Length: 163
Image 1 (cartoon, rainbow, N blue to C red):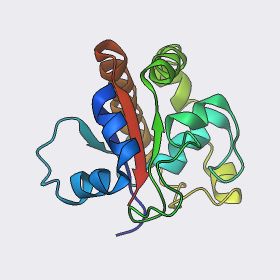
Image 2 (cartoon, one colour; image 1 turned 180 degrees about the horizontal axis):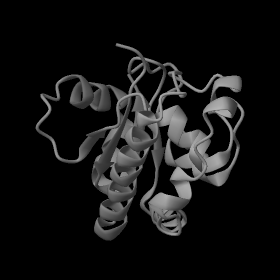
Image 3 (cartoon, rainbow, N blue to C red; image 1 turned 60 degrees about the vertical axis):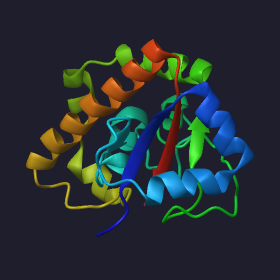
C-alpha cells in the first residue's frame, strides 16, 4: 500500500468545525466511500512532486511550495490519519499557493525530473529511473493545480494528509 497523499477542499465553516473537533475530520476521512469530488487522492506522487517543486524531499524542504502538501499547521498533533496529523491551509493561504502553482507550467515542472538526484535524496517511493514515472508525476501535478484553482475560486480551505 504505502504512504499516499490526499487533499480535501472545505468551506471556511467546515474548517472551523474541524478545528473545534478534530475527531469530526477523522470521521469524514475514514467514512469516505470515494464519491466526494472535494477529496482528491494523489497516490504516492507527493514526495516526487515536492522534489519537482522544491529540489528537495519533504524532510529537507522549507520552500513555500512545500506548503502545498504540508502547511506545518495541524489540527491536533496527536491526530493520526495514517501517517500523522492532517495539515490545513486557510482560504487566504490557498489563494497564495494557487498563484505560485499557476506560475508553473507542466513542461517547466517536468524539466526538473532528475532520476539520479531523486534516488540520491531517497525521494519516496523510489524507482525514479523508470521514465514513465515522470508522466505519472505530471498527471498528479495537474490534479494538484486543479485542486488549488477550484479551492481559490470557491474561497475554500485545503486539508492535506498522508494515509
